[in-house]
Length: 272
Length: 165
Image (cartoon, rainbow over all chains, first blue to last red; front, side):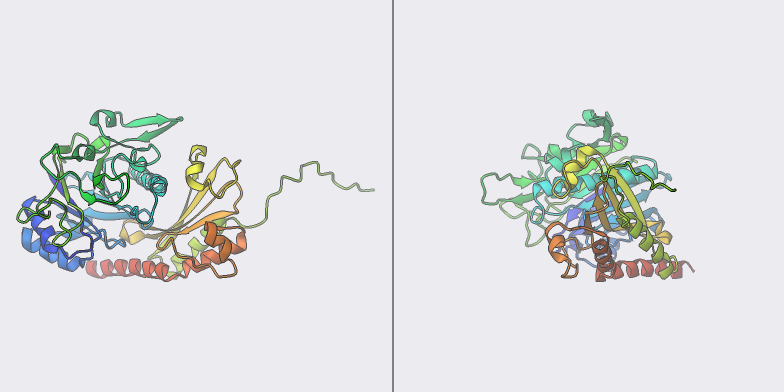
């Protein structure tokens, strides 16, 4: 199984904790956002902690690096868009098949309104679709800090990411709206709101003083194209509250920004 | 005795002789490869957006009768890096090439158009004619961010070349 870790580091020097997570969860692909750690440092710590050789994929979006236990030629950076903060990577598996890994750290609500985010999601989704057409397949996962919850327009709309909460719906592969077909993503993160599960109630906590406040948000997400639904193991998807050794939460149960990040990491696996 | 040719077409049909953003972008894109000895080149991709997306894209600056939005994006491409490409800038317009809405992606908030042209651009990030577009594009291509990206790509290609030699 191919195991992924995604974590927004909030520009903290968390290389030891990233490496601890990679070791404890046997991670193959480490995807980071708001990362200010030099690539040499992180490579060294990852290799020391895991005992595995990691590769750093070339990027001009340097705060969104990808490290993988792949040969360098098997981790290709295909395209990057600084506006939607999108990096399109190609992972070439040992079998020779490839996966399109779309990584984004979408602009925050601090800078863009909900409406702007929705509009720009159209552009993000089109870039992914165009690249899928070029590659000739839709074995795609999109992972990152979307700075939107799974229920927001940009994530749900057919013009945006078109990500649905149910495998059953996503399995239809496309939906026709006004004569045009739009491919689905499956968004398993819908199932991770609130405290019905063992893990934290979301990935990001924001108790702002306004009338509508969700407190916990699920901004950090993985979306899966229907082609990879069979390979995607929902039971491996977790929002982590510990790196396996030390908690990532404060005693009040909130993300501990002083010793970790204001976002919690997610891990998931693909049977490929 | 010769008779003057009658022109019965309406005055409303008139194609402006101004070069469109697409023509100018392609012209500039063709020049980069020579500058970098082919290590980094530029390519322009045009897309046409369907009418149902017009409001989402340009509803604020385009007239309501517009039916199509043309979007021309200039990418920086490194052939030796598996054709890696980086989105640098974009111009969007309706059936008329001007006004065009322009964006410089490495720093979309930057107002870097000369002061003589800046009031319109500042308000809408749109340029109203060929001269304004050329001036905006020149500023964008000469920005520090553009130069940095081109050299970062060149450096990466040369680094790979020396490690495989």
